[in-house]
Length: 268
Image (cartoon, rainbow, N blue to C red):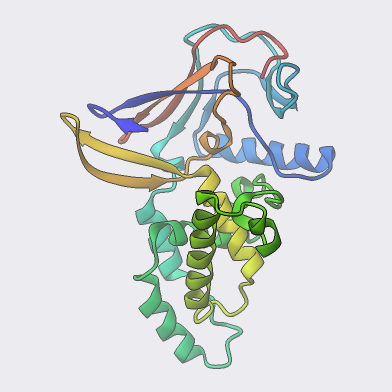
């Protein structure tokens, strides 16, 4: 995604993938998530519900009533977007040494290592912290997938062998090595964290991050990693299927979803 003259546009397909689980459980989490969005001044203009899109077979957001072309479907204000500055401050303030045998050494490790962690890892730690009951962003993290079974980035050695000499195998192995290296650092100040939890959080960031490019007159001057509730549940359209939603991003205001064409009742 490219930021041009303060804003950018890109087409997306209007599908939301929710956490695996029972339909009733999903519905409750989904309802709590939308209530949380409302409390954060996220505007949902369209009448949508959770269901299966008949055109794709994917489970996600379905229009209960028709949506006109060029209609604002959602608006997500800046205050409901997770920036790297926010995530880093949160993780720095986190207290994870309570169960450590030597809390002084653990706290020193936290202070020394957090500054060395990548933005991707900091965002993963932020999401892990926000899974806790009562956390400010917990209703959002509750609708993430419970697992990423089948994701190539979680392949074991036997599955990687099937890729043989594919460049993808090397890329996956490098990713897994980096995750393991960062986990070893984090264990020094978060001893209760498991590798499974950390791998899950990395998979969430990898599949839902929003990398914003700042450009002036076409020249790249920087990038920023963001996590945007609701945007992270909207996927690219399947091959051959036209998009029906586009977004605009204004850094000082927020993200708007606009319909690119009419969306009929029952469509995703």
